[in-house]
Image (cartoon, chains in turn red, purple):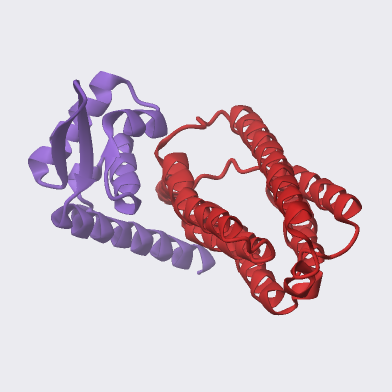
Length: 211
Length: 101
């Protein structure tokens, strides 16, 4: 039976190597949780500052040119702060998890992961800036959800499967938000805040705690 | 059946190299080294052996001024490795069968 056990062991090793070399598995659930909290904070600040859902398509027409400019600057700064903070937390927890399991962070799989994330993300970012430039504020809320979801779907090939479902959920929310224009901020908070926290917690218990 | 075990994949290192190259289009020497936890010399020897068998193809390029060598599995290598895995699987199955008897 010894040689059988040996063959079994070899097979397990092969499978492990194949997984480890083609998928980046050091993504931490905590990254998602913290990104979600940051997004909820950003959405809350936006709600407190803007009070009304003047972001919606209907609401925009009532806003004067000056406040519209101010509003755009505010949304742009708020959004950028959320993005940067979420990225910092994401990178921090990923490096921490990789170090714990003795894996390198910047290798061929993580490079592929970042590359496949960046193309839809940068496209979405430029798209939103163009919409801002044309004075269309509300579209950037569903658009960020949709492009982010597509980025996740694209990158999910190189990491755990759950990212694919998160991406799909974001795309669906974004599409819904395109039609329910009165609830832009709310749906955005749901997508970037609540979904991240839910998936992050789920992934934390599924992958982080066991090992 | 045992003689159908491919001699080229006898060592653990070669088995590792092939399994990693099966799921990646191509990998650099350093990436392979890190994944398989082998020394430079050891990895180079095994890679050369697999290359001589025609199971692995080598591509040398320059990134700026630094040479960058990448390795990929050839079609022959893929077929041979799959066959090797099939034999391994059959071998394990037959063992499991005897055990239940």
